[in-house]
Image (cartoon, rainbow, N blue to C red):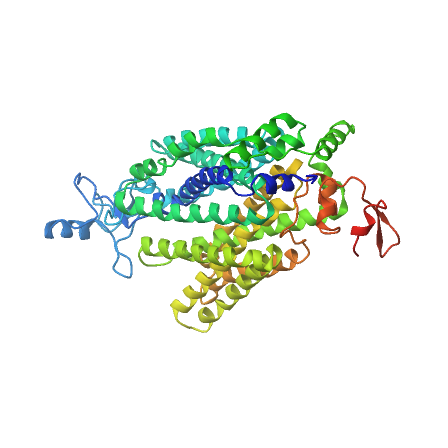
Amino acid sequence: MTLETFDDVLRKGGEFGLYQKRILFIACVTSGAVVMHNMSPVFTMKMPHHRCKIPGLENDTYEIQNPQHALLVNASIPQDVNGDYVTCTVYDVTLDNESEVACDEWVYDKSVFKSTYVTELNLVCDRKQYRSHSTMMIFPGKFLGAFLNSIGGDYFGRRRMYLIMVLGMTATGVGLMFVPNILTLMVLRFLMGATTTGAYLPAYVIPLEMQGPSYRRMTGTLLTTMGTIMTLLGGLCAFLLRDWRSYQACLLSPFTVILVGYFFIPESPRWLVSKGRLDEAQKIIDAMAKTNGVSVAPKLSSAMFEKVDNSQNSGAKVTPLQLFRIPRLLIRYSLLYLSWSLISMGEYGLSYNVTNMSGDIFLNYSLSVGVKLLSLLLFFFLIERIGRRAFLLVSIGTGGVVCLASILPTVLGGSDWVFRGLSFFGKMCVSAGHSANYVMSPELFPTVLRSFGLGSCSMMSRFGALASPYIADLNTYVSGVWGPALPQMVFGVAGLLTAVMIFFLPETRGRNLPETVRDAELFGRIPNEDLAFNTEVEIIPKSKNEETEMLTPNESKHHTN
């Protein structure tokens, strides 16, 4: 039997044996560490109740200490119309004790957290905008990380980029334990965004390229599930420690496993074949077969060698620009990029809505994570049954409809819990689609540019992520019943538009991964067995409205219209 495709090699050498499971475990821990850091601002940037510190009272606290302290607070701190202490001014006792002046020292409620970045750096009153800025710095950082990985992953290798980003992520995590000022915090948040995305993408691509078609779903499911579970562990750390410095130290605990595990992660043999480093790829295949208990390791076929040689010696270097010179691929990847941006906007925006709900922060956080786990169950049980495209279309479309439906209890004066329930359900649908997007998207790119493909998709998603908090805050600009409804309207319309775009993408379930740009162009147009390493298929337009596929005589028996 001739093994013509790399997927044939994986089927022969073990599609999901011990070798792949070991790699996937390390990737899962990496995913968990990434998500824990991504969600850390929920706790580290929490703004507790606060008021101005009473001038001259060194032992002042937010909690009332005794009746004398209560009298002093009432005499020094103005109150609003609801009887609550104002947060940014004190009475000027040097004048008539009725004039208010801005303060530069505050006391904070420590009943939930002993300290956060907000209390450490006094990010309140005229400095509160820095709280939003520092949180948002992660997204331009993620844009940079995706860009670097999209280029470096395909030119320098997945494994090398993974190591660089993991080391950077570790160093940045240590730095976040010792933040002296807001500028340092913003720089470190930017670097953390870059390194988390830069580490996650190769951790996703390497196990994906080491598994056969029937097990690729496992990669997306386990990576996302582990990330979600470790997010709960991150919440547990915050609940037990209640201090930003100790919490940041807790987030570093997975890196021991990650740094040791790096030595058990090989370079992607698909990438090595695409670069003509066939001997190195064969050594990895031999090691995989031995670890998986296969007595005779499969050999990379001459067809693979010839294809690589032809592509290497054809005089044309494979670059990302080639993907966008072909009209069919230009349209396909443009739709894919737009869908990533809109899905990311909905995923982050709905998360902001959930975490900003009134009530206990740990309960709201746990409910949000629980909804994410439910979305993974849907993803796991349905994506192989109905296909990637169908699952993505239904989940995102349903999420859009539900978000639009959540407007009704707001505008018509229904229960707040109905609104919250619809918001949670909408988030579950969008999260399920977000998981499916990570499985389907890299399968649409050729091996020679797959790291670029996933990295560029992630990079484009940051535009939506950057817009999400501002959309979530639309209710602060619009008063009345339409205030809370506006963000849901935007997320709902975005979900429906995304579903329409996904309808025009090809299905990838059970198909061989495209290896070259030519394979990517033919993806979804010819039978699966003719896709990989097919150098003889040529598309020639017959007329303005139809095309005919010219195949060699030996191949014509496989042709279907």
